Image (cartoon, rainbow, N blue to C red; front, side):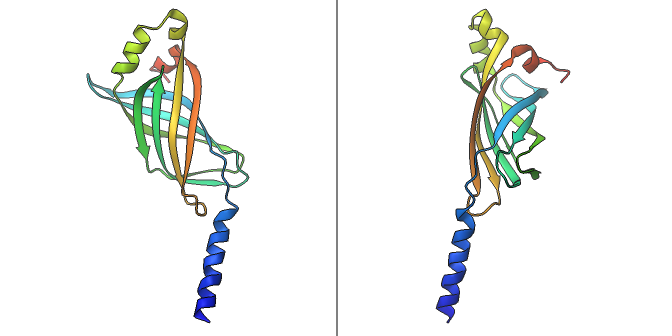
Length: 155
């Protein structure tokens, strides 16, 4: 009888995760603000928007983000901040990043004028959640930003 109970319980746990096929969330820049700037390291505050294309709420309990600008690694950040993105909705949050902007700045200095007006970015990493068996959801977003917006300290 115990064997049957264990098998049924195992089957229920396995089935709970089968229907949880999550589409990756879409992340985008809202603003970037310098908190502290040193020669070799910069501390930045990044405000991100997370859009949830799924029909169920996404309880986020961690985020690991890498940021590339103009094809060069720019910054990395992790956050253990918990929040929920509503089903088919969006949420914004702030996180801290550590950057070594030297490579991206060199790349921008050697870029042509058009490339200096619009900068390509890439956000990639993983979002941690407590949904079903799927504990991490990878994301990889690319786009362009007006360089003036990225460098605007008032934002």
